Image (tube, rainbow, N blue to C red):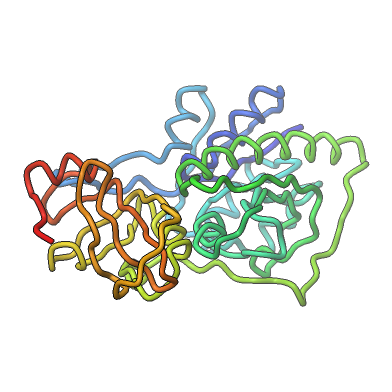
Length: 306
């Protein structure tokens, strides 16, 4: 099938790779413009662009999706199908409806739950034990189109956002492969979403970072896992200054100490009392101006007096 692919981050690369490996004619790749990064502000290509150029696929980077430039690209390339995976911008309905088979999206949740920009993070933040990917027809409304296929997967008790991103990227690529074949065969289903069951997964912000130790140990652990790598959970309960937290362990131990109290700081990590009377051990942290490291390594140079 002649396919135009639209995507930007690493998550989308797996889907583009699968389309290429399945032998489809990827007539073009639309991705967001290169962005300046680090101190030198050097322009860095998106992961999708890097993959596309390495495989001699035509790359297009319109500044906007709604000013006519993107539509002009679609008209010139004349794809039979548009596949979108984490492109990062809302697309006009005219563009979505142009191809013979329409436009489909690889979305990293079990729709209608977690529509929006950060479904993987919010599934972890909310303590979900299961998530998945949905392949759906795209419409003008955000992530509201009919579903073609879904694949479910459990969320591991210690799984953080980057690990889940990587797994769902591969699951999404597999589901996409089957959905494109079903479209070609004329066997693709259209299952309307239950509008009464939808939830929203908004973009992450720094306001989500501060840890509230009055919450349960499990809730704080989910916060830490769900906010990696950005904005990262943080606390000033350890040293009085904000410290980022990247990994923690629910010890199961009980305590009657006030939430936020540091109970121990040793080779096992930094144990803190939580609001449910349980103890959470912080095992990977980053102090202000420092590097991300094991809590035990930090404590060797910065012992905490209890």
